[in-house]
Length: 146
Image (cartoon, rainbow, N blue to C red; front, side, top):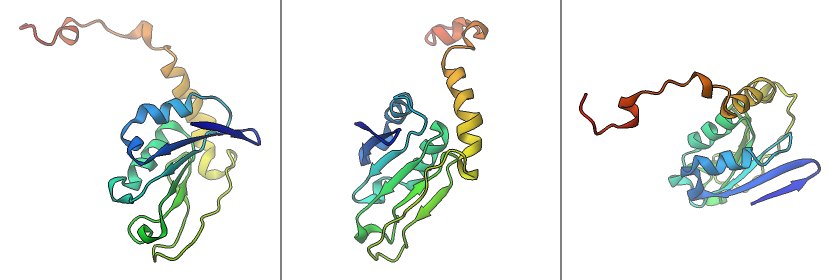
């Protein structure tokens, strides 16, 4: 699910969906300048935050990780920048808290990913390398003996 708010498109994904990177790519491809993903997980032990950091970095967008307070000691909630770094996290002591961050594509945490990586990745996934791909019979038919 996606929704627009003040010129930004937000995508919402649930815990199990972290195992499907194509869903994160679908949010990325939904358009708009900023594409934060709001990710909810309860309990967090099945969703390692490092996977969310990888999805944020490989798609060049922000990811918010939300868990119930009682699980905050093992995987505190927080927000991840497009470069895969944590922008802000709740305390790991299980106390009720909220992490507040700025989603600014001109910030140091986002600039390289948003300004340089996102357009480059978009071009490479758009087919600019198609003419340079090698057709290899062994790759096409892996059951044949050569």
